Length: 255
Image (cartoon, rainbow, N blue to C red; front, top):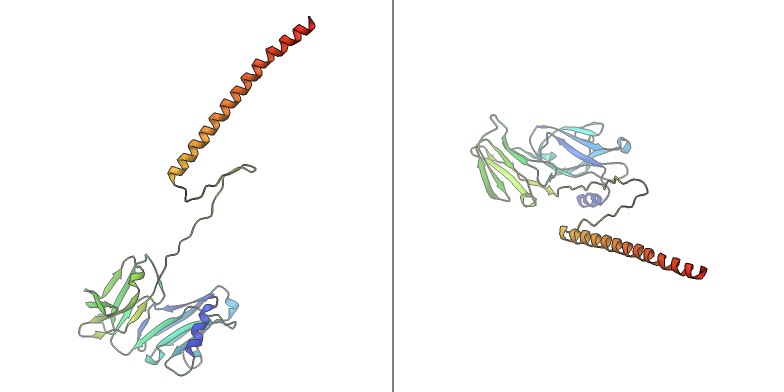
């Protein structure tokens, strides 16, 4: 059944599922609010999920309290699973994987994909206070570093930082693992602007031309201008020289 849900991701996504507080892991009995953010409020988005419970159900149908395009829920371990938004027309939003633990340690990490170049902070948290205890952080099973306050910041993340993360607090236990996804940094090219007057002719050179090529083209243009000036001078001089000859012939005929 979950396989059919994944196939729907090829459709256009017009909504985004957000989670508050922003985390992919929660303690049992934590309060979580999930919202379907969309451009078209008339789409009729509904929050659905696929958990260890037997059926895929929507918010308010045996779990959670529906409030418009949001769903509020007090989570338990059986609420661990995949959540998404779906409209009457069928398209779905991004999918979010939430983990609810009965243990005493969780790793608070981004629930949505992070963009290349951004800074990401991970928090290893205990259910009891104080929560900022020394913690060890792991990626794909290997120790990254130990932090004295339970916080670890990955600066300027790249695709190599994508992976499965968890943490451990001595004397309290280990958190579940959560996957962190890193997406390509979006780049936008500003549209070309023109300050030319109406009727003028603009020459647009390819952006790939190197400075040396542009220099050569500039020299060629200068040579062409000089040649045209020389030809113009020669043409004027020829016309000036031919005029006296015409006048001489006319005077002989009149005589």
